[in-house]
Amino acid sequence: MTTNNVLLQVKDLRTHFFTEGGVVRAVDGVSFDIQPGKTLGVLGESGCGKSVTGFSILQLINPPGRVIDGEILYHREKNGREEIVDLAKLNPRGEEIRRIRGNEIAMIFQEPMTSLDPLFTIGDQLAEAVLVHQKVSKRAALDRATELLDKVRLPQARSLLKQYPHQLSGGMRQRVMIAMALTGQPKLLIADEPTTALDVTTEAQILELMQNLQDEFGMAMMFVTHDLGVIAEMATDVVVMYLGRVVEKTDIQSLFKEPKHPYTRALLESIPKVGHKVGGHLQTIEGMVPSPFNIPPGCPFHPRCASFMPGVCDAALPADVPLDDEHSVRCFLYSEKTEGDQYGSPA
Ligand SMILES: Nc1ncnc2c1ncn2[C@@H]1O[C@H](COP(=O)(O)OP(=O)(O)OP(=O)(O)O)[C@@H](O)[C@H]1O
Image (cartoon, rainbow, N blue to C red; front, side, top):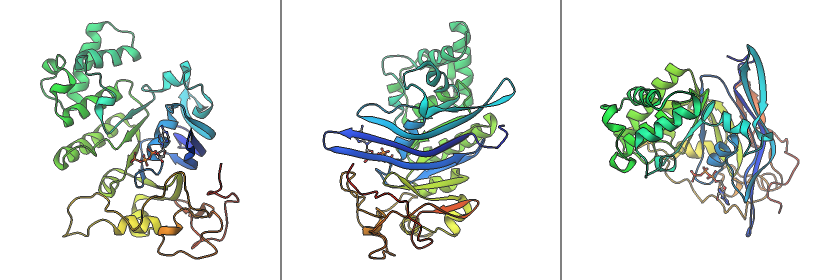
């Protein structure tokens, strides 16, 4: 464990896409910490910048996108001492980030086929992943692959090694992808909507598996989702994102007991109440997420906000204000402090 009990510090991260239609400020000043062994849930509607944040951490943003500013401080132990690496400063195609990717920080996605190659057997792909991390024989790599399939509770691992991805169910493919992510024994697993495409029963099984593996490996997780049920199940801490910014940061208890930001409250109110529950997915909240090319000035949530104050919320961007050690919010209901820049101004 690192000395100051932080594994990853994201500070004022900005990732923009320079498209022909204009600049998309997908991530525009995002800050949060992830502690060792804990799970940070990243919550928000589609298009709020959750995935781009995850990809930015691993320097997996492709042109026309670019991390243009900010720090991603990864704390690790090297030779018994703490070392801090700023991932944002590493060359995205360089050796150092490639060593960290998959090894120390791994990522899994909603669609396992983004990680699995349809042309190769599960055994070949898992053994290949093992060989990236360890200098062992192909046979030893296949043994390790079998062990990993056992760990993700896939029965008959030996025969599974000879199968191709399309021969597996969605849940099985997701387990294989988790096994691949674990080959390097990562300190942080970034999980981007890993269960969204699965049926409810399979989803529950995968979430339980991930929790068990997290305990066993002692890894931290960044869990990207738009599903409050999944957040409640998995997260210890939460950041709520809206249009490229964090609007509220809190521990999981306060998220449900004392949500502060009107956006967070709207998200919580949008889940069907107990007794009428059809699933944990977010229902739509009033209005639509604005186009990234036409972001409202001031607080970008103001056109949809139940507490909109004319002349205040549409005039400037509220600052991120701490309410206590664990809880901060970016809203004029709690402070008149402004960010000082005009979020909606053209780039
Ligand atoms: N390659 C790209 N080119 C242009 N814009 C992009 C690109 N990738 C993402 N974006 C934009 O960045 C913004 C944030 O997208 P992101 O995928 O991070 O949202 P999200 O919150 O993860 O939503 P979802 O749950 O739908 O994935 C969106 O406006 C999206 O259109």
